[in-house]
Length: 204
Image (cartoon, rainbow, N blue to C red; front, side):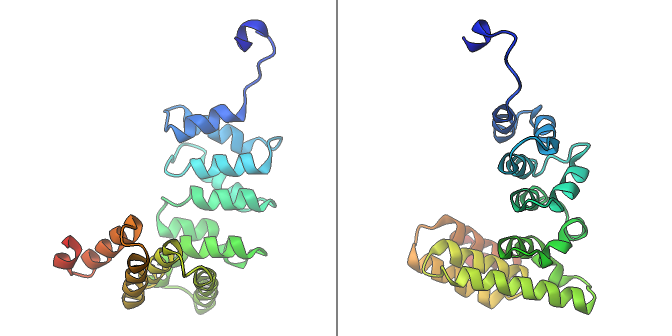
């Protein structure tokens, strides 16, 4: 009805790109990239667009993420951190390693979660210490909310990625004790058992 009444006054709206991205429509990534690169859009819109590009891997994806991860606005940096979540860990490290030193704690701990698997790789001592410090910040943040199964599940995830399987199991079991039907903890505990050769416990 609006198009009929105002045929010459309809400009594209970022909501269409975000809707297409959330629906995983084929044209969504191209629309989201346009929004992410449009500096006239609000930061929260551009950050959302970058986060929804996760797994897209389209032509300008890497360049958009590189720019987003170095943007002055933290909402855009945070969105880009989500957006690179499906990349290989070495590529994530190359693009986002500098965010372990971000001025904002929320960015540092998100970067720690994204980059924690690098603890199993060869790193220079300074890089390893930097990552370990950010991981500790992430753990401290989750421990503040450890009366909730969500935070305990997050702790289980970071411990597992850091190679602390005992800590991961303990946190996930605590989450299940708090809320026996909490599926994220049940699934993560099963996956932990599977990855450590305890298939019978995983099936149970």
